[in-house]
Length: 173
Picture 1 (cartoon, rainbow, N blue to C red):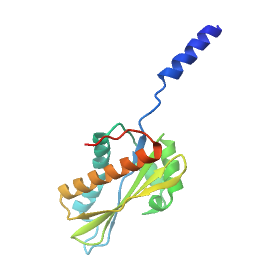
Picture 2 (picture 1 turned 90 degrees about the vertical axis):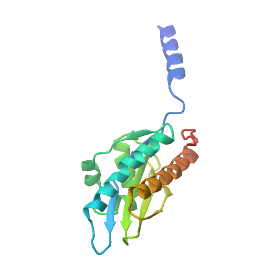
Picture 3 (picture 1 turned 60 degrees about the vertical axis):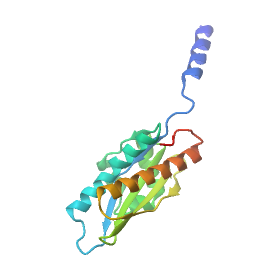
Picture 4 (picture 1 turned 90 degrees about the horizontal axis):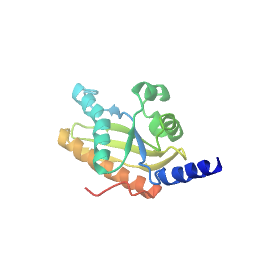
């Protein structure tokens, strides 16, 4: 019996992945639109596209596991616009419920028809602390501008995750 237990222990020791893929939860981006015509349907659609675009960008960069958090769970955890961006511990608890290692919290702030900003926080679920702040300016409203900004953001987030976790998950495209 001891031999079977020893064999099983050795098997488990060598079969467990040492460098497991980082598990990332990307929350839905919130829109804060301070323009003269706030919350236009095009801007709501653009903002809603940011989460899936960021998830796709992560999958192109390397070995990341995207963890889904439902919109209902996100809504239940927030007390209003900007809440999860300002309370990293609450965002971390939301990520922990879904088994994530990292949570990306984003807000799309539009103050002009010419430009907008993505205010993005990377939260370490284990420490419940802010791991990085990534403001990104988007000049224009075209899909190409949004995609370029999201791709830049994904590279910066991936580099920070790699730096903090010591993993070699990212690759240079």
